Length: 188
Length: 316
Image (cartoon, rainbow over all chains, first blue to last red; front, side, top):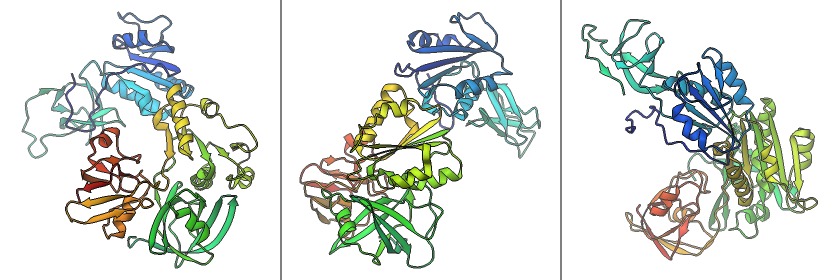
């Protein structure tokens, strides 16, 4: 269960259902995350297709499922989303939260409404971190404080989430005294 | 009316359809504010001792500060605002209006804009169109009217918009099929509706059935408050008692008794005039409060809503 975040920008993932009135359904999963979508995919009686970003994995995948690599999905999805009928829904499952929101952003740019983009809770606690001092983006951050690879500052990983960068914001935790090194904590 | 009120002069009156009259206002001094497409002003009408304030969409070019234009449809069944505008207001008269405010602004992120106008509901789109043309935006106007009553600006729009305009005159042709109009829209289309409630409801129902994204459907639902049964309002904190006649809105009756309540649209949309209820059941007629808020009877929008029975108490 998700706890209600105290920071408003932290995403909350509501349960996802299939609206059978919708004409076209697009299921998108990061490699290894499809099992989260499989029940929904089964339940969906409408026109549907499935895209996996990455390689084939041990997961049982639907027949006719498309594969695309992480380098080319931005352009491909941009075009795909723009051509969808207006009555369409997306369902996104990711290991990483940043993946889910990168796809969300592409869909918004293509003209979809937020309520058409159904996001499932990401499977890992890995965060993309945005350093507010040197603007470096770091993937896969799981604890706080975290040393920024860009500027070497020790960053407090906040729950403040930037939808622009699909990243959590990091600010220096020991600006007054760089020798003050607080203990590491696992992120939720 | 607040200090921000603008004094205007009626510099032109034109009949633009059998039941619709257009008024041009020019400022008594200086220039008007430019406004954003879809804005409205509230016009104050002094009918004897009675004050009526109705909101009307501006239909002039938003970037033209030399005049404001509005169009008023005669509604003989209403509380008198439109009758006053049609019968009392003469060329050269001075009136008070509020500065423009906007509750129906286009969403510029749309890939395509689809306008659905019903009758006098063409007015907000008259201010959209010049801006849409300047920005080279992709748009279509579907205009539904009955030429024996409405249909203002149809010819002018035809020459301005050409293929972007689709007209449906119910006096000479079958009714427009809303389902067909909205079903062909590409991804990223936003729909804007201004017209009778039945038009808005049929689009919303169609959208629900066909899985359209709701947040891409915008509508201007406000209209002058409808009359109802008279009732009495008691004010718990100030101890005042205010009588609301059948033709007055609760907000108008409160104002007539020097109870000032912040307000903007006066049509149950903007939420400015929200007032806590202490006792008595409310007949909610607004578009602002959620169903839960309405059911809980916690508050009321006095601009349009009324008492269910003869008496209510407000917590002010």
